[in-house]
Length: 434
Image (cartoon, rainbow, N blue to C red; front, side, top):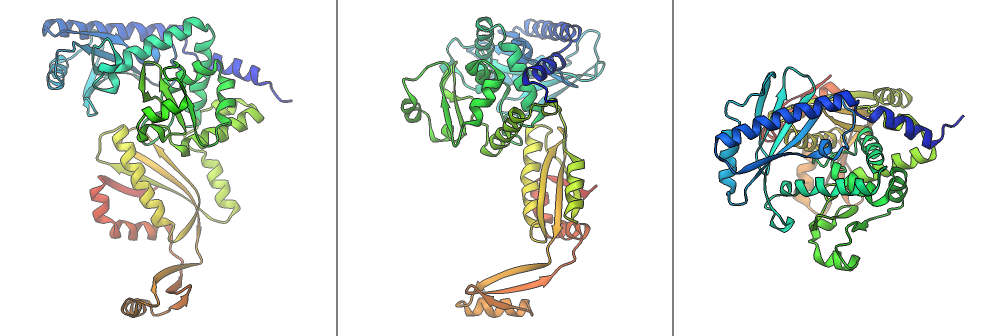
């Protein structure tokens, strides 16, 4: 018997909501950190205020195994970027929270921010981001300066539509499970704010999915009605802001596309899963599975192929930098492995630290074809023939085909030797098969 979509959404909402006791604890803990930040700011004589932002402030936080709370130190507009950097260092020099064991580390970004990890409470951390206190979004020096306005806007939308928060929670849970949640460059999906805006615009999670499925190439949305028409939007925004499949005008700042990070590849994956869910509703679409290993194994068995997992480690800073660096490297790995094997299935999975895994279902090629120069380039052809003792001419070029029985382990050994310099340049510490 098919379960109705409404029943599934009703049950999912129960499981995705953070338990009231845990939410209260998180809010109280956040307030404790905020008070400590305020005390440090006052002692240093800095003109700044602190506010809680992100999903916690907007009540759109979904249940997870760990929580990152966004806190913002809002500096007076009179301070320069260099002064803000110096003040942040002063605030976090010998930083501690009463009753908590904390670890503080600086994270490099467009503006350096600080991550506070509570050692005494596993799964709780705070990202303290410096922003500038502005009255008009046009005065923003950095995209993070708009965070205050984002909280205000979504909160007002939630006041108008009492069911909106629940609909946003469902959308976030779905996108998170389908690996479409996150503006980081190794995901290139929907940011939390983009999801909130889209669901606010379409009113419900279900309508959001239905409308997104209809998009063929691109859709332009202006929920705040800041422009006269779409032509006005296209002529006002730069070309770089019109590349994403969804152009979503930020209601708090008309010159920003809130969905600019979304790639066509991620969007197509989202559309595919949305269609499947609406066609055959199931709670499995909300289950957060890293990689479907049984599927990879079955596929490899069905085609009498090879299932392989490559683990990458980097020296780079954990987060967007590490994830993006290893994603780029994984594309080189896939391109090279494709010379010896047919890549049937492939998936990149970033662990969130300094390592990631690349999963493959491979089918060994019968032969490797080396394509040489045009037959008209006599000197190049001569050199090719000297290198490849077995050769033939086809499509106006000289070619060579050789049988292969190369194993995945032997491939990796050759790959590491051939690309030793590139591996070092891309800050990859190690590549191995697990």
